[in-house]
Length: 327
Ligand code: NDP
Ligand code: GDR
Image 1: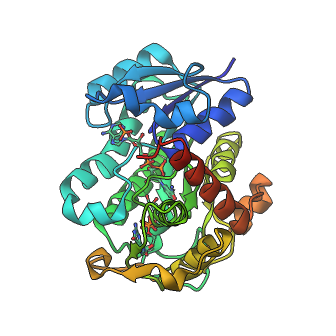
Image 2 (image 1 turned 135 degrees about the vertical axis):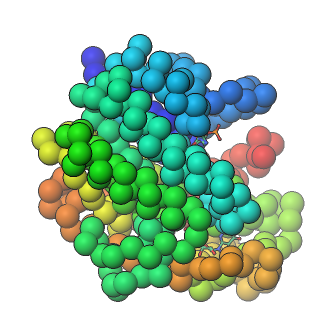
């Protein structure tokens, strides 16, 4: 039975990747950082139904010795480094922590792998945010980067270090340059979930308005379930490489919002307020991915439509609210 180690297992992608790998017959081990709220920390793993099928081990991306110890004792075949301070807006408030966890944390993982299990295949969660102020209308693996936030700069460092370890030490280390991907398990602070949760609250009479920031930003939004499959496919290749994972469609926040309100039988114009406090110091105006390489070399293709995903997220938020389980 192959063994996978996932950092960031308690996050959105960690839950979907666990479900996917368990379905493939993997033993799944997850890195869990210590928390005083351990009763709620596995909420996503519980929601998706895998909490009793994964094994959680104590460690932190900031603590190299814990990572080396885990690598040495677990000897995983595949390592998925998903852990990060992943919220772009917070990265201006906590640039140093973001650099440490999102940037240096990845290097800690690469080092622990090199020291304790160098044969393992390594996946780094890179990001379309690295394209930032875009240098080409459609972004592919060859598009130059222009990071626009402390988060993006930290991810770019981790991205180049992954390539560096591949080229310097011959490690099977791949980077997935993933564009935004969402799901009912998306953190409530990200715009898509903020919208579907807000729409559900308005629909159920618990709120009247939804405050949002920049409505004209455009993103290439896919479903997390499709994107974790791409991560796995990358590690099944004989040669490690970097891949853009995207749908190839771009949509504005305003249009996403309209879709969600319409799906609930409501009108966005009656409920949405723009809040200047939610604008960012520097914005990534538009992202539009070109996933040709992943489609050709990995045989990967997204299976979920945007409207299907909006409907799924809205249904899940309505159900959460109905059961009073909403945060
Ligand atoms: P989440 O924010 O949902 O999850 C982040 C995970 O990282 C959580 O499990 C969190 O643990 C963990 N973590 C944070 N700090 C540490 C630390 N010091 N030590 C150990 N674990 C830590 O992110 P997503 O699932 O959405 O994304 C997964 C990865 O992919 C991230 O690296 C993100 O930056 C990247 N990415 C995401 C995209 C997206 O659209 N979702 C697109 C491109 C890249 P805890 O639960 O304890 O907080
Ligand atoms: P992003 O996702 O920054 O692209 O990073 P987010 O959903 O936070 O923002 C997307 C766009 O929506 C605009 N926006 C708002 N954003 C939030 N969060 N809240 C609002 O109320 C709001 N109103 C408008 C933002 O300004 C932005 O333009 C995500 C994360 O998952 C990263 O970890 C990942 O690397 C990238 O996607 C790809």
